[in-house]
Image (cartoon, rainbow, N blue to C red):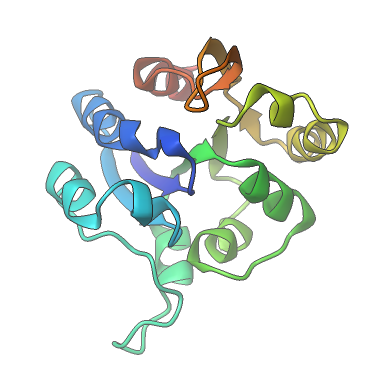
Length: 173
């Protein structure tokens, strides 16, 4: 399967090279699209090395192509990991101001869409975040629930991105 991995700007982005390797071991071809903040946390070079493809990050290509349309047409499945509170909100509202959110709108309904949220437990527990998650679920997005664990802020709680192996397994479900 052709899997497009979207990477937003949560600290859990450091796990994405392992996720790419897991997806490839499972037989998937993987391409990555990242937000600018996602690329502050994991390098495009690392993602390109493990995926075998350059990382898409710019809506405005110098080549005159339309990467959001090209990637949306290429994908048979889309996984956003990590999906920050901001990304969940923008996706649930249909806002499209960067490559990743624009291609989420361009993906055909037949394409499976999974999101793996990652954030502080206080953020995850907020009613507004849960409303955005409910809206996404209502449109068929599969949410790979965050797990309890040690968070980047040093607190323990629910909000850590699911393990890469669990995300790979979710695609088979």
